[in-house]
Length: 163
Image (cartoon, rainbow, N blue to C red; front, side, top):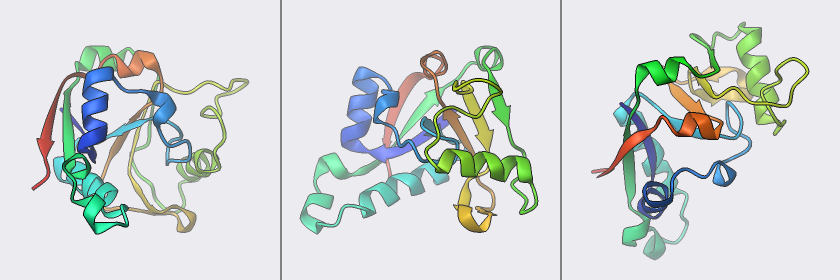
């Protein structure tokens, strides 16, 4: 199971029309992609943060702006057949991890594959807390999906309210 934290209005669009990679943030930890986690409470926190970014209290309380999580099922065999990049740790001195983060956070296209502007299908790793200071969030993970092939393995989405 993987979880995505968002607002009700976006969850409705995602579950009805599918994930649109063009609507995702281009300057995230692993670049433009659809971000999930294996940790339900982390997804709930992401959803609550999305709601908190709405400055007007009246608009924030509208039903469409309620925080929710989308739970997906993923087949491990299908996942294993995709082009993946995995980071197990984000130690301060882990140059490979941090150069990748800085490359993606700068808004560069692709994942800096040799002689290519392509993306890995999926990237796994810790969540950065303060990326410029090379700090990660303890007990966190993120799995980002960067291609339409990768998005297709996210199946049976279910929406749950954040309480």
